[in-house]
Length: 99
Image 1 (cartoon, rainbow, N blue to C red):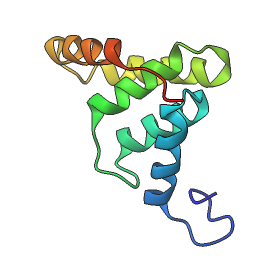
Image 2 (cartoon, rainbow, N blue to C red):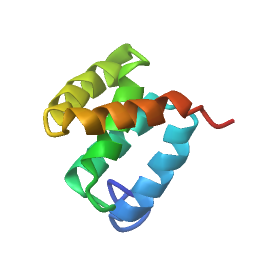
Image 3 (spheres, rainbow, N blue to C red):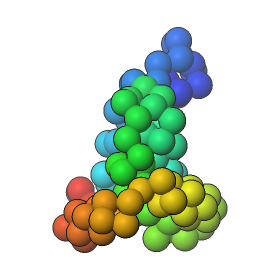
């Protein structure tokens, strides 16, 4: 809602905060939205590594969001050095969905 200005003005930072809460709980569309925001620096400082992590997580879920996330993750991976990707994969292995 905050991303589209529903119920108030457009507020990308608030949208990112809500996407993060949902993404941490395993909701793939929020993971994808968060990855896009991080990749573009919309409502948050741009961070290609974190964007790739969230896109990768969403890609594993399948479905429409997973398909879109897979394409985004592949695009972002090209911008990351191999050592950075490896480090991020290790970080991702330790990640767990929050209850």
